[in-house]
Image 1 (cartoon, rainbow, N blue to C red):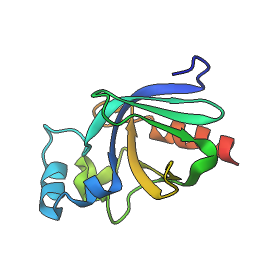
Image 2 (image 1 turned 30 degrees about the vertical axis):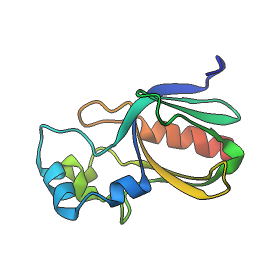
Image 3 (image 1 turned 60 degrees about the horizontal axis):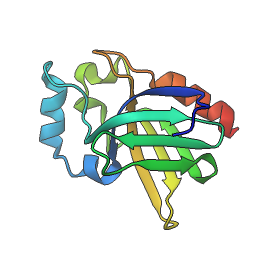
Length: 136
């Protein structure tokens, strides 16, 4: 990773197809159970520069370097895949950050990001604001 970061954080994340493969019942149980954290499949760190989003997976299996010019959509909130009933308190305190981008094979990919999660709070809004100001 380069050293000139605008933002860095701890990250929990999933690809869209990973979230979609979780049953509605499992998502609902996750939202009702206070012991477990958010729904995710990977964890690691995230960093933002003026040109890239760097995602380092803790397991080193799935690192991503996403050029900001490849980002096609940024959305803060719930949708039909990552639903509010899969989160404790139905998403009252935080929402996932959905990032759609074109990968190196020129195919569309979507990831759901949960940045700096701590009990009922995340830094997703801060990252959303930073990304929208850079992408504008």
